[in-house]
Length: 319
Image (cartoon, rainbow, N blue to C red; front, side, top):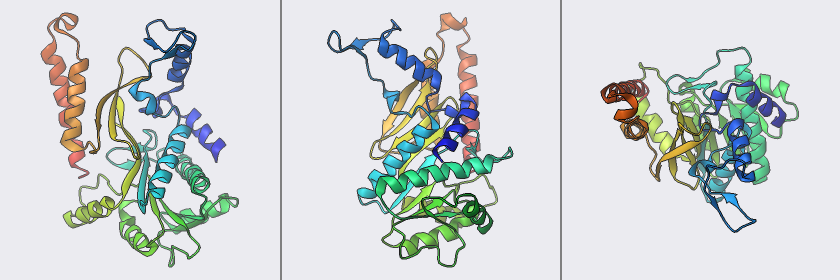
């Protein structure tokens, strides 16, 4: 599974790594540590020089690194007594902020499931437990049982008559969608003292026909879970959280390709209009001066406001 995840990461474009620092940035940091770049502030004693730490050092360098971070965060949350945890690694190629998971190309779904396998097997090792991974439907579960005879966990589906067994020590629900909400709630209640982890849940979608009661039920259900790990793309940056740390928002550095500037750090998750305001303020900070843009401030501001307005509109569809 580890080799497959590496293959998935290398075959995806650089834009996959929105919030995951790409290899070019990793190479740059290596050169910085060696002192090749002269525009960095160096700290430490002579002979022990190193590059000053940056806020974006918390971000992973690769998809593999993001999964490993997610496992560490979930493990920490579970050991701290968190019986319900969520891990989100939302890649632009396989996820859309409005419609959820994207399976546009042949093999995308298999890539999605390989990521869940790698996460599950690392989590089993991290916590030294017997795990059961539940997939959205019987067809998917049967296919994966056949494809992964050597998986380090039990495989089932949300609709199983007895989805949680007495021998299970942790249950992972892989990519539950809005149609699986009732089953996910039922399984979580059945688990009782067994920790339940939602991996890349798709319970929020762009289905405008969804009723208010269902939305409330979904929100109330998700509130019972601690978000142990989240790496969510937002344009040219990401929202990031690794338990027990704060929620952070990063935006791309215009003058340092592959590096990100932290614009938010708080225990509260930035969402909706609050997130829009954070991004709008960051955009204004990055806006060219009057001299640089020849008096075009109003054009830049109008563009920023238009983009923020569109973001608010699109988010309203998924509330």
